[in-house]
Length: 464
Length: 90
Image 1: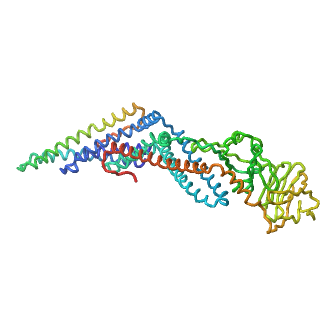
Image 2 (image 1 turned 180 degrees about the horizontal axis):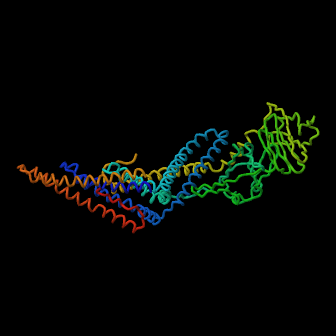
Image 3 (image 1 turned 90 degrees about the vertical axis):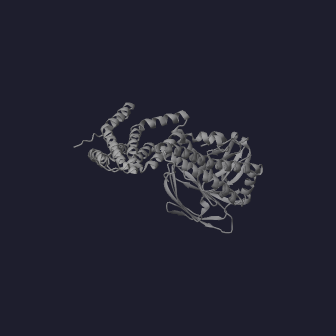
């Protein structure tokens, strides 16, 4: 408003300057021509300044008439950006997990991630321009009028451009989704393969960074699928899978830990089941493993029943230290593969000499053997320290052949699926890029035309 | 508000100067028109000066009214703006 006030007074000043030039006793025709120009300029700017309110209201009406809505548009762009970010994130997990087994996949994933990143950037450009215009429509148009009001037409072209830029983008930018839909046609067959991904946490909310999961669908077990940085990704060409009861286990050190997914139809628990824009059935399920405190490199700590608080201070291959706080007696299980051997266990600074006092049992885990020791923890808060020794010559995790077999299973049926999915994603990413750039240039040329009308100058003198 | 006061000050000074200049130009115009110089072009300069001076006086006189009219119409449409300044000759 301050700018508008200054513009108003400037227009009056311009008027009287024009009068002054009329009254000058200098017969130079070049100078005298400015007189009437300044006077008409002043009237025009005064009218524009005083009717800016009306103009912006008319612009809002036009925009509503054309069917655009700023809130819906901003929400949609935000969700599009979030979706592409998720896709990039998924692909990075994908390439990290599977690059050990399929060496060429890294390059393929990079080839696909690049257009998606570009479409992400163009959407972010659209989003930032949208917020600038939406929040600053008054500021921008007042700034434009202020520049136009400076006498002698010094900043008239620039002001006209800013003003028409703000107005045109305010009216037309929310129409981008309709424009986008014109360019985007739907493919003949949508891809029906669901992709399930998510993060893994334990019952205390802490992420579990390594391990394997296994999925059991109607007596067929698919596993082990390795994790990457506490995330997992899994897909199958059996599209009926999501509607049959499924159980997901956390498959480590000979135990199949139950999770919160037991005999559930996965479709019912899909969190953030993103709309079918990419025609991919993305299903995010965050898994909470029951009973497990931590797993890493062939050592797992689990506890039964669930206690109120466990904090794990140190967890390495040679030394574990944790604090357990419980209101009732509990049992701490420590499951280790045979490569480790426990030297001593200390509870609250009371060391036990040998492991014979602790019950134990042994198990097979794919191609490894191991044992579990059970430590009784009385009620209250206790500090437990465990010292171990690692035998370097034995393996701590099962052979990669098992994971490889599982991945073969996932990729086996339809190699064409993978190619289709990648093609589809790349096509959408390129359309994103083209559509946003086309639309922005369309609006810029319209605003240039409007600025010619207001500013009446044929030469291109835009802001940049 | 400093810049607005500056602009208002400038407006007042401009009006004062232009009233005086209008008078001066009118006198000079008539002087050239009535001078015994035989060249027609010089006489036409004088004619032009007189015309412009009268136009200037005309615009100065009704400038305030035009701005008042614009403000009135826009307040009719719903915008509230301050009165245009009425510059004094003194």
